[in-house]
Image (cartoon, rainbow, N blue to C red; front, top):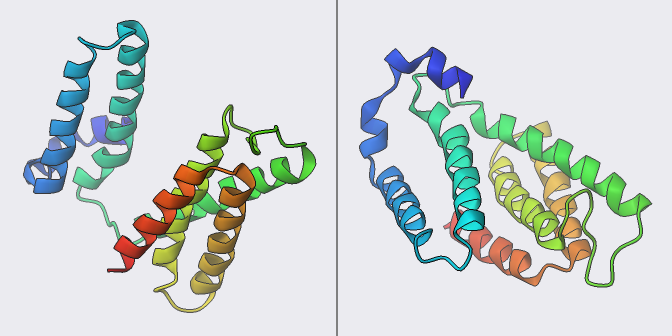
Length: 167
């Protein structure tokens, strides 16, 4: 967020007019409107704020005229570190009856970390050399974490998204 604010004069406004970003903005507007009819508006609003901040933090830097050549590899490195920390938690703490939660509060969060990491790791398989090897290791570790979390929705998400990303 500081990077965006610091370089606000250099933001590419056309980026926000692209179809994927306009779709994301439309989704966030619909989510904001859904707070009005939510069962618990306070909880729904707090979740909306978290999602909006996540979108700003993730999407915002791509609107800056910076080199995105190493962006995916940097994201992959972050996931590899998160996988390593999660693996330590999974190996050293006992699982709950529903599945392993790792260092998160719910098994779905560990499953989603693994699922999204699988997708990012699949991109690294397209690279050469040590990046492909690290991608293969993190891909395997991601599947292991998803299976340890026993998160069926995250496993389905990972498999469907993996096939779609290969297409």
